[in-house]
Length: 290
Image (cartoon, rainbow, N blue to C red):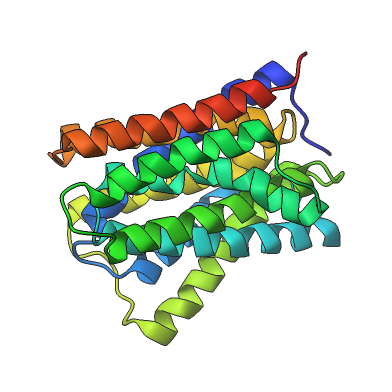
């Protein structure tokens, strides 16, 4: 059975999904103090998949090859996005990472222009220049130049841009988006577990606080966020998804300041505002009429 929502339902669900995923940076920052990147990714994704199996076992038993293929493609791209995002959190504040990663929304039209072999629209170029100014301020805030955290966050932005494009195309290709979303979580878990055994020394969390954060990541961010994003995007446009993605750095920034006591300089605040303006400018102007 295919899961389809109205446009309004899709937009409400996507806003909830993006806000839920924004909390992941807060929980991840806490867990990364005592756990490696791939180890964390494997635990949260495999726990999420284990919780989803009894809830959606009928959909999984009826999954078609196209849905397995879509789940693997989206899962691989999310694996790359998450790996670079979490690695960047070791070196940069959550708010900075969130703002930089979400420049993906403005990167998307340029990637689509390359794929479709056409020039980007003027409004996309203007929005990108505004975002570029914001990125420059975020990069220079409190340092002499871009560090490893900034570079990893920008790498995550490009990975996220490819993820948005792939998710948009696959979720509109006639597959069951919910099933593909669940299989996507499994793909992230398997890839992360393999990477953890190859490059790290995987272990279980050592404190109750770490377990609580990982369960929150598994249930709220992976189980709810990653699984339902393809469902939400299946009923709306990529441009609307881009506009709603502006919620991510706002929520992540507020959580970082309130709970992690991160201090944003005037340059960082101005840079973040410019990124939001650029994202909103492009998304609002390209949003199709009902």
